[in-house]
Amino acid sequence: MSSPHSEQARWFAEEVLPHESSLRRYLRGLFPSLPDVDDLVQEAYARLIRAREAGRVSYAKAFLFTTARNVALDIFRRRKVVSIEGVEDFAALSVADDQPDASEAMNKQQELTMLAAAVRDLPERCRQVVTLRLLYELSQKEIATELRISEHTVKAQLAKGMRRCADYFEQRGVATLRRPVPETEEAP
Image (cartoon, rainbow, N blue to C red; front, top):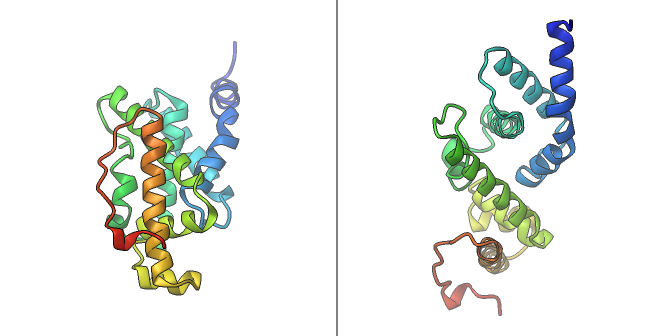
């Protein structure tokens, strides 16, 4: 007969640990400004274990990724680096822990994962501009100052990034609401 502790250790080793490397990639892609994700991953593990003990975990991987994302957002809120409204583009795709429809939650989690992958696939400068604009809500002028580039370059990189993210989604069969980019926003 196994003890509850050994059962939990087995569950953790089989259901959670295999996802650690993909979780770290996911977090680095979604939150590239986080210097180290070790503490974040450990906090996500602690929350996952507490939730499992309370009987609230059906799918360990989905719960782990959602919890880790929420831990990262909590860190940003505490640091006042980003307001809650500042992540509305990402949060619109996020999964609420108490959402009743599991299939809808998984679909939204997949969309969030796909968005993170789309942003990760952008060229470095473009990824930096898109992240600073969408996640941190910096203005074009602030981004230009932060990255030491012109505002015109920021505008062009942002337009390019949004087009490439939309293309990424469309190539995978996910419809997007495309708005034509005015010619003034195009790169020369």
